Amino acid sequence: MGRTVRTRIAPSPTGDPHVGTAYIALFNYVFAKKHGGDFLLRIEDTDQTRARSDSEEAIMTSLKWLGLSWDEGPDVGGPKGPYRQSERREIYQAHAEQLLERGEAYRCFCTPDRLAALREEQRLAKGRMGYDYHCREIPAEESARRAAAGEPFTIRLKMPKEGTSVMQDLLRGEVRRSFEELDDQVLLKSDGFPTYHLANVVDDHLMEITHVIRAEEWIPSTPKHVRLYEAFGWEAPVWIHMPLLRNPDKNKSKISKRKNPVSLAFYKEAGILPEALVNFLALMGFSFGDDMEKFTVAQMVEVFDFEKVSLGGPVFDLDKLNWLNGLYMRDLSEERLLEEIQAIWLNPTYFAKLLPLVQNRMKNLNDFIDQTAFFYNVELAYEGADGAALLPKGKTQKEMADALMGAADAMDAMESWSVANIEAALRALAEEKGLKIKELFMPVRVAISGRKASPPLFESMEALGRERVRFRLRKAAEYVKTLP
Ligand code: GLU
Image (cartoon, rainbow, N blue to C red; front, side):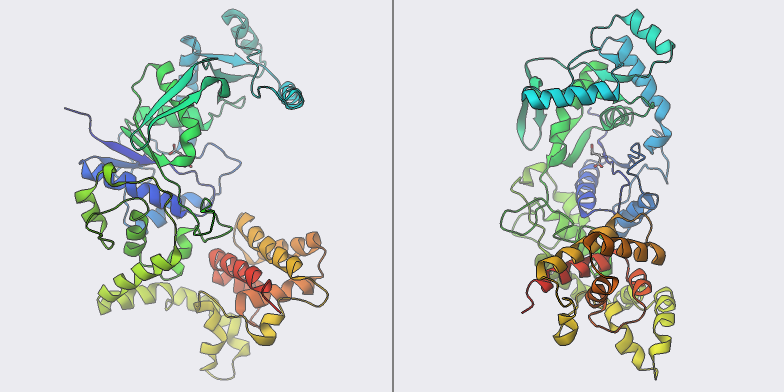
């Protein structure tokens, strides 16, 4: 009898939960359930410099919203925990030691300065890039002595210097890569933290993952992982690399937040139902059969097979998502419809944020509707004199499109979403772009409210939320280019 199927999603908590994470989670979930197996959530948070504190929670909330629940994970526990990599550091250290003992890895004492000089030399010589094996032949006793004396080191995996790495991918067949292109990978950094490669492979093995289903962008890492399994003497999982989601543009570029909203929170706020969004993600590469486009996750589980997944770059097309969502909307009971609308718009928390912003601007109660309409819309029309205010006198369309895009990026880059941080980021941006405060703030005001006069700007942006603000700034950047 074969092993129980176990799959996982292993997101890094570096920002807002991404549609790509939900897409990969869906296929892992469905495959595990199809085979009566387990689906795990593991948080890959070893890169402390990139981790954002609120991100883990947000990932879990979004996956739950979509109904993709896990059998084991940081919140629910399980027999193979902990499920957060930052809590598993000793495990990785012990495994790196194990590879040293097996002669499959070695300590590298090269300083960051030496490595930088090496890179520069290689760049000028236009030859092979990568580590030059300088420490690979240091005798074991000398290596141990230097480590004991406190000399800093990393641990590197010995890769073959020639030959070809071969990986069997369930969807792609053989994927080959010449070892000459592959470096002796660092497994453990000098601060004792593992790299992605070591932590990922050790965890997949210890958590008994049978099928690694992940995005195509990880293919370049897989030869290193295959080699690691071999070095440990472990059986490797089945590899399945799903096609990347694409923007609906001419070159079908990889989906990116510069072109499309990619955060799950955005779609929730844009009024998309969770069952429509998972259904839409399922259509990215999977065909149900009989041209069926509308189906539930439970139905997908019943018929799922990787034979029904094709690799032709699936296009993340918002029109299609909206169409599908419309079908689901029609099916909702009145009760659920009311519940959903109340949950996103007519809830006391949101009202409590908006009321103080508009109270002084209202002459009667009905003004509430007019004053707050922009808080409820997804897209705005920038018309007439208001639209024209996106382009201050003496500025070019290109300059302002660039400034508005810059504002969208600055909103993304900030750690926590607060009134003070929004204001600081916009002031810094004005300075950077050589704009007067008014020359930036007025266009931003129009971009987010559709009008020249609005409730207090930064507070309004905070209430609107990061994703809708980014979406509007991007739209305004496009619009400003079309102004006469
Ligand atoms: N931490 C990686 C990510 O952020 C995991 C990739 C994998 O599934 O191996 O997606």
